[in-house]
Image (tube, rainbow, N blue to C red; front, side, top):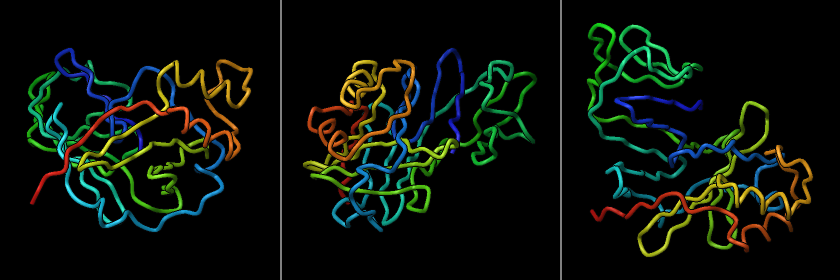
Length: 216
């Protein structure tokens, strides 16, 4: 799934999956991680359910084989300020790869969101979306267009889901040191299982967002 960037009223809302993206390029790996562990066919029942984000009131939903995030908002913006990843087609904002569509009301050279919620499927277990587990952490591996894997770490503790990525300059530098990568401009890593597990042990993933379980 492509990123959808909306520049609305001077605010940049970036849908990148579970969390908001940083300005650093996305780190990728040659294999789904951890590479020496088997894939999981489903999320455990203990993890399934709805979780609320206190920052933006979005809802993270974990099902047996997929993760969704529902956003609630009211927004309007200028068509000329749309990011290049987004196009206006028949009163819809459509991502460049055609996989995401948001209905809008077009008024002159502006648009208004005419739905008050948007459901984004972030991860669905498949050949290109691989789920693995290591020491209480779940790793969501998504194959990108270069046939490498972007990885998000997910964990559950005391009813709170935490998400983590490798996005900060500090974390990327630590990964470069562990893998002895000499090219500081490279964000595509070849990593051994031992190196990746050391990276996890050294708290290599930044904590990006948290979601609290919604009690039924």
